[in-house]
Length: 433
Ligand SMILES: Cc1ncc(COP(=O)(O)O)c(C=O)c1O
Image 1 (tube, protein in one colour):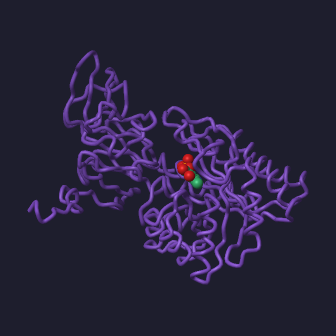
Image 2 (tube, rainbow, N blue to C red; image 1 turned 60 degrees about the vertical axis):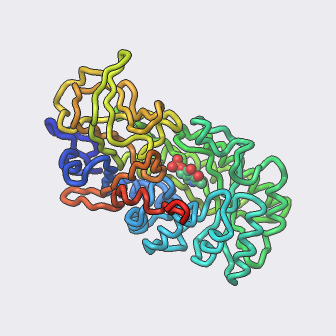
Image 3 (cartoon, rainbow, N blue to C red; image 1 turned 90 degrees about the vertical axis):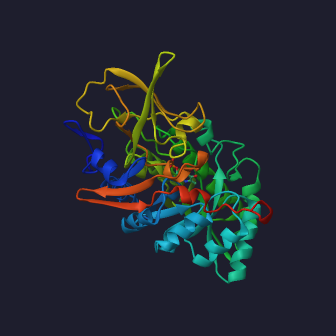
């Protein structure tokens, strides 16, 4: 794996580059992605999941970070791609991503998105509820194509994570509830549909999960459901998609769990319970997002002002909740390095503040740092997932550029927005001109 956050004297080295050099070359704030780190996680997914278990595919969850260049990397590594909107699907199409490896997910899909997905010939559409199944069928009939479908189910498992990123609990907005008999009715209705190929089920119980017990429990619940459907309707589940959610440590002193620490017990449970129930083991998918890309990204900022007030030392930087809403949204904790000052003892305690007009726009609270001054660089680690993809233009702040680095190469994969971009979509009605 490329050096991530390594130290070389005063320098902060990331993906083979000196952070200060990247800041000088591309400006700040700047999202930096290490190509080798992304590829090494894709390789691990291939080796520990796809090559270990028959008929399996790891599908990268594009919501974590998606650009056309990212699609190209994922495609070349042989993984699938999970998209959740017309915009993400369009990105995959622009990148020439093999459509048969694309999974179209999400709740609240519009007819326009469903039409696009059907016509593009995506590998699977994952239906989020009964009326959506009907609409997928209608879109497929209209275009004369048979669409392969998985039904997303809510296994009723409370994953041990922030409630905003739990998705598998009873009452979740996602999926078909298992407990209310809806699933069996819908399977009965569509199992022999002319334009739907009902292949099986999907669950995703949440994000940032560190122990495998909720995933394993969900597998057991799903296999029991599959067995019940086999007994009651003779329905054979051919595929099970077990979602993502594999956790990543934000404290650089801790090591993130391996993918195999989740997938091995999940697959062993799947195999054992299918055997007990006397049903065939289905083909399987997993959908890691954060686990693939989080540690591969860092964000570089420049300190604009250092201020001491009420016993707190603030270092205000040139970005914030617009380029990384996660601390404000769910109290996400980050760690940072200080390029150019890596060899200076961290004798101070500083709070890294974003520049948005919200007191909650704090990127890191109470971080040990060297003495800081205006112009210093801050490199926030582990910002590869759910930052660029969740960025906004609050306060009309342009979105930073994203660069993809490897030793000897640094390429812009998303241009920095400009102040002109901030007014690009504005229109002034005639009476105000
Ligand atoms: C259906 C689905 N699959 C996969 C993921 C990826 O989750 P993570 O990035 O935690 O692996 C998500 C995240 O929201 C999701 O909704």
